[in-house]
Every structure is written in structure tokens, then in C-alpha cells.
Length: 450
Image 1: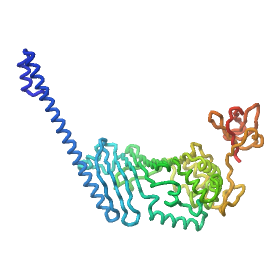
Image 2: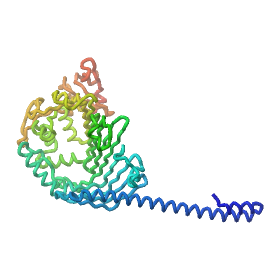
Image 3: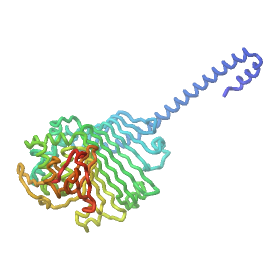
Image 4: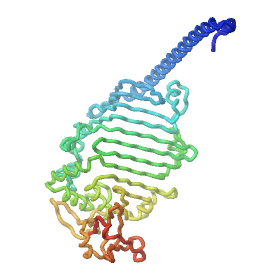
């Protein structure tokens, strides 16, 4: 690493210790200066290259913005590369010109790929990859003016008017909440974060899609889909060459406070206690559920819905159709068979909903044992698990019961009786061939389905 003159000087002074040390110091100083100069040059070159790539990326982004100028006005503060090869766009403002939707702002957009050099090569025109096999888009601080948009409020008012013509709303005089309603519930601007990513396997021809939305003090929602039979991600051949089949669709919802707020707000609007409001909501007739859910839920789904409204936690819905299944076959089967065909599963607060029943019948559900009217709405009685005292159990022989032990474990079955200090239940799955026993002393809570 030393130059020739330093080496020669050290060789000549090898037998003179004092002179040798002086020569070494000078050579080392010279070497360090050259090393620092080289590092500075490399740093300047790296910064220059980064600025050049960012300039090329800015040119490309400006070109895309110019292409959509007739329909939207778009501005941004800056675009830059981070150390991991991701492209970041700060302070993006989008104003649609064809409708009065105000200014939509995204604090930061970050694009990243599996290949950290992808965007650098693309900016320099050295990559011919039209669509990468893996891509992630992170949106931070998204403000779409969801509760301050007059445009949205007008459409919500129109939707409420249309809904009310056929079905009584569930929240006072409205079904769909406006910005005023959200502000009355204590919400400010609904600013959220989002993450959208996909991964493609060219060997397995499988595409994984993921979406996550995080809205503080409201909810976290996740969607996952796995699509097989995707021959290519090339846009020109994607639709022609692909015979896709959905292997998995999974929806996750975790409440962060919205359900409790809306329950209190709507029960006040209806002049009902929260429990009465929930009872009314769960017991609405098939016409209401067809208008809101698109299906008429069965008794087990309604019971799970009740528990979720009273104790909001999480909902997980998934479908795992087999590869041999085609959606054209659905019309050949009754709706009650769809859960098995699509391998549907539903977990509410981590409890499986079994059986998963629904129909498209707009009339009162067949399981309704009685009906009443609350504020003019058709309401049906939906059986549910109700807490009872252990000394009252004798009155419920033959009823379905749940027993929670002090350890938190839950046992469920048909109550057979109390024998030798144990609560005995007949297994739902195996019938009389299996009896489940729980000690009365260890039983902390007992619930009866009635």
C-alpha cells in the first residue's frame, strides 16, 4: 500500500533506528492522507450516484404525474433512495379534478423489492423486468378526509335514504355513519397506515397477496389471498396465459375501540341500553341482514356476533377451496352446503363458530322461537349462553352448557347432572359414548344455552 519512494527510504534507513522511525511516521501519515482522500472520493462518488439515480427517479415520477394531470392534481415534496434500496416519496398530495373530494395526503410512500438494486437499475434503464416477483408498498399517514369530506357525506346521506325505504336503520335514523357521527363518537381525522405486498413463485405458479390497514383507535384489518395457476406476472400475458384458482382467502379484523364506541353511540340514538341494542341488532330479521351482510346468518353466527358486540376482540374468516373446485359449481348446491364446499371457517374472539350456517332467505330465520317488536323493527329471539349459578344447574338437564374452570379452561356439552361433586356433560361430538366431568369446586363460571 506504500508507494515506491517510501519503501526505498525505509530500506535505506533500516540500520538507523531513529531515522527509520521518522521515515515510517512520514510514510504512514502520507498513507493515511491518501486513504482519507480515497474514502472522500468514494463518498462523493456514492452521493453523486445516489443524487443521479434520484434525479432519474424524479424524472420518471414526474412523467407519470403528467400522464394523469387531466384527472388529478398531484404534488410531492421529495423522492429519495434509502440505504436498503427502497424508494421513498414524502408529502404526496392528490386532488381529484373530476369530483369534489378535497386534497388527499400521504405522508410517506415506500416501495421496496426483494432485489435491493431493482429501482437503481430501473432508473438507469438497465433492467428489463416489467414486474418484480416480490414488491412491497408501505403507506404512512394516509389522510383521505374520511370524516371531513362533504362529497362523502352527500353519498352517505343518499345511501341512508335509499336504505331506509326498505329496511329500518339500526342507528337511530341512519344505517351508514357520516363524518358528524364519527366526530360525535370522539374521532378526529381518520389517518391510517397501510402495507400492500405480494410475492410470486415462478416455479409453483403461485401468487401471494397481502394487505394490512391500521387505523388508530378504530381497528386493524388484514387480507391474505393465495392464487394458484398464475403463469406469469408479465402484464401483456397475465390475463391470457393465466388460469387462476383461489387456494386461500383470509380476512382478519382486530378491534381497537370502534365497536364499543359505535355500540354506545347507536344505543343512545335508539334510547336503549347497550345490551338491549345488541339484542335488537342480533335479532333483526333476514331482510335486514340480506341488505347489510348479503346473507341471513344462522343461529351460531348470530350468537358469535352477539358476543363480539358485547366483548369486541377479533374476527378471523377464511376459505380454503380445493384445487378441483370451480366457483361455477356453487349454483348447483344449496347455500347450507357452501361452507363445506369452500372449507369456510370463522373464529370470533378466538372461538370457532360451529356450525357455520347462513341462507339467502329474507323472511324470519327458521330457528326463531318467538318474535317481538322493538321500535318497529322485526326482532327474533336468538338463544345464547347465559351465566347461571351452580346451584341452579339442576333445572337445565339436557341443555347445552359451558363450564369454565379456575385455570381458564372451557368444557362444553349437554348437561347430564351433578354426580359425586362433578358436573357431568355428554360430549357434543361423541354423544353418550363420552361423558365429560368437571369438579364443582374447580368450576368458576357456568353458562347455559337458552
